[in-house]
Length: 217
Image (cartoon, rainbow, N blue to C red; front, side, top):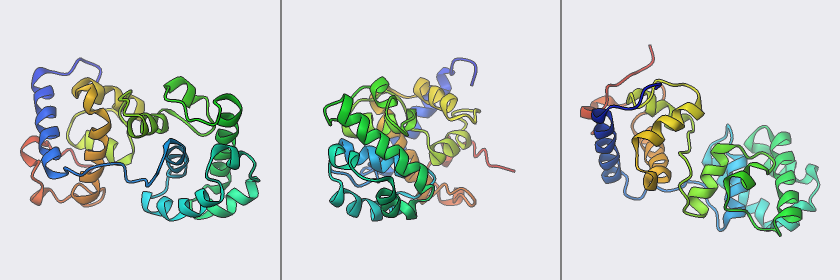
């Protein structure tokens, strides 16, 4: 969306947000975590993997390596064995090990609540940083754009972009900053329960009056 959003589009976006808020009042982060470190690791593991699978893997992982200092002492082979079922396990193990070491060596074992500092960690790009900032620290620095958010944003014609960074910028321009973190959860909930990738249930969707239904051909 190269041009500034129209007033009508902003109004429609607000109506969609309010409607989803009523539909999913309990929308929240699906990754089970007890602290920022656990959320950081879980989010790295969630790449191209379901949250459900990650939630099955992390209890054993955090039982063995509950802190950055403990995880920094792990071998990559040990981590690979624990996270194997999440897919891409070699790269993910390498990333969480590197992140744990950097947290221990540069941040006194604490996950930083700063975008640039988070981006300096292994395996952390903007999407992961947004997840951690929004859900662990209550800081709305951006919008998490996963496959659900990207798909629904295009279907609802809130963006015409395909690149996640550009989609994020469009969504940030349409919704209030204070709502950015929750917006992602609402779109993800709707994407999982109603607006599925292959077969969206448009007939039973209560958002239909504000959705242009831009479906793939």
